[in-house]
Amino acid sequence: MQAMQTDLISEELRNRFEGATRVLVLTGAGISAESGVPTFRGGGNTAVWKGMPFDVISSARMVERDLPAVWEWFDYRRSLLQTLQPNPAHYEIARWADLFPEFTLVTQNVDGLHRTAGSREVIELHGSVWRARCLSCRTSYEILPHEQRLANCAGCGSYLRPDVVLFGEMLPPGAFEAAAEAAAACELCFVIGTSALVYPAASLPEIAKAAGAYLCEVNPERTPLSAICDEVLTGKAGEVLPLIGKS
Ligand code: APR
Ligand code: ZN
Image (cartoon, rainbow, N blue to C red):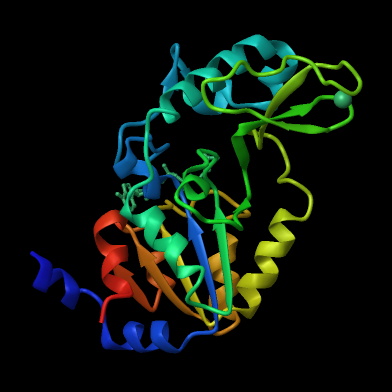
């Protein structure tokens, strides 16, 4: 198993990995699948809550209509997550941050597992289930595992909502712009565990490719992005990533 897998990585990718200065990594739900976090579409089991598809319960409209129901869904997700651990893919990416002078980690995940694995700088494009935000003054509050979360803003008293980008909402100000800038400047771009269907996140590898970066996808399944990749590593992130930096 080990030998065959190592050959999965091309000499080209090894050389570029060795010599790169500016590297961008974009991750999606698939990187957390081996930790037991359900994905949304491909590969792992799909999330439905009390008969409601995730894009209904996780929507701006539901915050207006029934904020307690939205919190119930996110409280459930946090209760699941606090029992789960990062997997080798998360730890490998945390290690990569110290290998390259300019390393940018962008995630679509709201599970916080990159931070738990030791990644200090993470552009969380879709927010985090470990934060709440005031509906009025937008102040955000950290939610700690195993602790009761605040219901109201300590500053203005308004209700708090999950600090997660819900369906029908824009990304947090500045997050995508910072990611797009790094994508346009990187030499090597890894796309790991995403179906590459949700924009604008899915445009980041396209920006990197158009700017001349070497594009490498890691996914057990093909995605709409596979066709423009320089290298497609078919497999699970937790098994494939530790092989990339190995000589
Ligand atoms: N390693 C790598 N990739 C995996 C693994 C694994 N072990 N298991 C599954 N995958 C792949 C699947 O093949 C699929 O292509 O991960 C991808 C998961 O795709 P989605 O469930 O669509 O997740 P993602 O791309 O992150 O979704 C984007 O959509 O629902 C919204 O806001 C939500 O951030 C999410 C966004
Ligand atoms: Zn407030």
